Length: 296
Image (cartoon, rainbow, N blue to C red; front, side, top):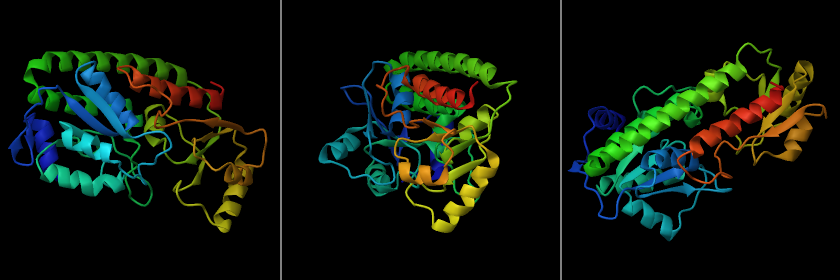
C-alpha cells in the first residue's frame, strides 16, 4: 500500500508513479473506480464523458461491511486509478487494495492523505471520514485526481483541467449561495442521529446539540439511552437529522416529542445518478435537509 509520505509526494509532484512503476494509460481510456458514490461523483466531474467511473459500494451496502463480487474484483484490477477515503473507513477493502497497489496495476489515491485537506476528528482522536461533505475537500480531491489522470493520459490533460475549472466554478458559486442562506440566521437547536456532519457544519457555522449514536453499527446501552433522553428533553430541539439506515425504534425511544421534526439526509447520495453535476446535487441535498430542519 502506498504510504502517506509517498502518496503526498506523488500528489504534490504530479508524477505518474505507482509503487515504483510509471503508470501507463489503457487504450480504452481512463478507468476510475471509487469506493463510494460521493467520490464517484467527484471523479465523474473530472472525466466528464471521457472513460469510465464507477463506485464499488452502492445502495444499502456499507463501507464498513462489504463483500466484493467477481465483477468488482475485475473492475479493481483493470482500473487506472482507485479512489477511496482510507483503510479505516473502507476496512473490508483494505487488504485487496494493498495487494492491487503492490502489483503495480493501479494508482491508489487515498483521499484522507491529500495535502491541504480539512480533517476533523472525534473526541477519541479517530478521523471523521465524511470528508467529502466539505466542498473545499472535494475540490482538493478533484485536483489530485486531475493531475494523476493528466499524467497517465497527457493527450486528454486539457480536457481534465477544463473540467476541473468548471467543477471549481460550480462549487464556488454553490458555496457562496449557501453561505448567504446560512448566515445571519437564528439557528434552532437540532439533533443528529450520527455525528457525521462536522465538515458541512464547520463550513456553514452550524453545531448540533447531541447525536443519538456514536457508531451507527453499534446500538447504545440502556444507560446511554436514558441519559440522552434526559439531555434531549431539556434542550427542546426543533428537529433531528436522520440517515436512511437509522433505527426508527431507537429514534422513537430517545426522541419522544412528536413536535421534533424528522429529516432524512442520504450522505452517500445513493438516490442520485452519477453525472458531472452529481456532487453539487449531493451538497444541495444535504443543505436542503438542514434548511428544512431549521426552518431557514
